[in-house]
Image 1 (cartoon, rainbow, N blue to C red):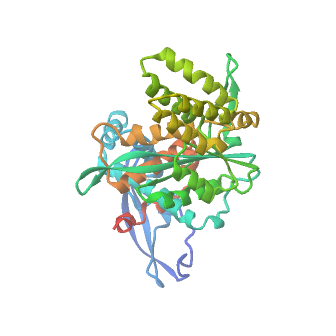
Image 2 (image 1 turned 45 degrees about the vertical axis):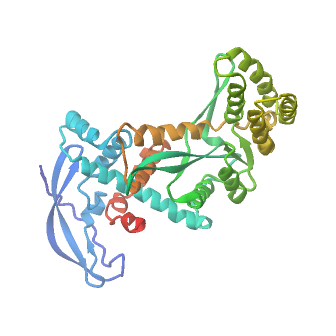
Length: 404
């Protein structure tokens, strides 16, 4: 299909880079892949006499990059690639649209989108005080974080590196409804992710903090930091979110009860486990953690053997008791479970990056996590509507140099 656009465009008299004079040099043919198939069009090539920069104004008019993909086609293949292997995307494109394109092209396009998202986040994290596009008048801001392992190609075969994932949302992002049985169901319709693969805790802390600033950290009335009892998360909260209220995830608190019960009575003795767990669970639900610790301590003193599980549970609750005021948290209407980050690790990391036989270059895995995270933030269409494709696909990737 041949398409010659004869539309007269307003040509800038001066270069946007140096202000030099721009002259038309030639007409060139370009082939792009679109949702309708291959399109051939002719464009003018302009040259700056000052800095030598080449301009293609027709590309800018049509929002095209120097890549062979149209913006809509790039959006489509990236949207598919964050859910399925690149070879499968290739197969589906041929089956549904009769479009033949290589899996390598699909991978490169998706990775470049993810790279740019990641590098932009890193850049912002270095200067969070310069963030201007941030939410205001936030009532309650929630911050959650956790880690998950990713299979990475290393010098000695497959290595597993931890990806630290964070999720930030506020009260305006939550839709709440009461079910028929009277239980309240909460759904997060908008959120923002932060991620760092194998780059250490400090890098992740900075990205998580800048993400929180964008979601309204400084303007929020209340900040809730929800996590398990991991020491690195407690330290992250103390260093970057000192004004926040730390809440120990309710499900982790109960999970430790069950783990202790299984060690005391065996996982097959469900009656004994239930009778031991349920009374303590009720006390925790009412925020009576000191009473629970006292009961556990009495059991330690009365037992003659197998005290280790009780001692470990006592230590866990003692170190986190300031973050276990569950009745008070519920009365304030705050979420007490970090299920959002737990499920995010599954649908962002496990379901895409840990399928059978998968192994990743670190840079590609990181880029995929950022691209998939952007899709799962529920503003994918708005992102593609406002982004300039050339900013994502035209520049050479700095990741190989960065990795070295």
